[in-house]
Length: 370
Image (cartoon, rainbow, N blue to C red; front, side, top):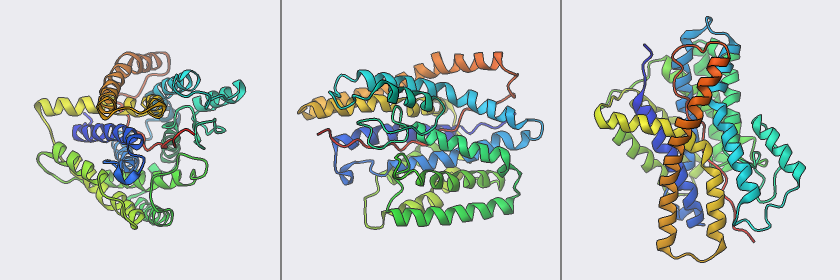
């Protein structure tokens, strides 16, 4: 039986919820230095690292019994139903947002082109009030595109690399990531047309490093892994800004995150903590891919008027909790039945397909409406 890393599931959920809070706090605290989770955008790189580890664990031993087409079918079945649901929510949000005013008056054909390309996860022309985003109707799709691209690279040639060749690829991609982070000043980008070049840079090192970590058996045994490592992640996300933020971001992704994943893979949980990890693993992908249309509406509501602090925090807390429930319901009543139907109507799915690794999750902040 394939081992299931429950603590990694839990950490994925911890980081996913942190991303939601991070985006809401962007609007409460316009100055990024005041955002309590100011570095939660690094969750994107953590998710890519988890993805490489889990993909290697789940599929390395299935070749050549599994075809490349079969691998692609499994990944599409696992990821794409919620991509389409997120696109639908984003389309509804863009057309009917009650707080956006006249800021989203795009023509029918521009919206239609964005919808069609968004369904294919392809970049599309920027829509009004979406601030140069490559995937205007549902911003998380920019990172799903990178997830798909690196999955294709894995299936076509990276899976064939030995440990030494893979290590060389990891070192090379680490150098590129480090230079890019220092030169750009941070790793919070890749979602816009202007910074789209950074998206493939961000995916390569962590994904390949996650693969290498699995292949060399990079596991650190520890007790109490889930609460301790969750605290470590939150502490990283709360680090202060400085003139060396780019260097710090690179060091965290290249050095710290592999250690967190290694320790998570070497930890075990039982009882209620195991139930919590499984729940967080279940809601992690849907809360990521579905949350941003709600964040858009929240931002526009926030900019509509002067809200007292009590109302602001009550609405923000209710939104986070509501998104957790919504993500669970979407997985249970939409994603799971659709995937089961696809598995029945297509060719027989390879047994034991694990939960999808969470695609990355840093999204654009929307500047205040003028």
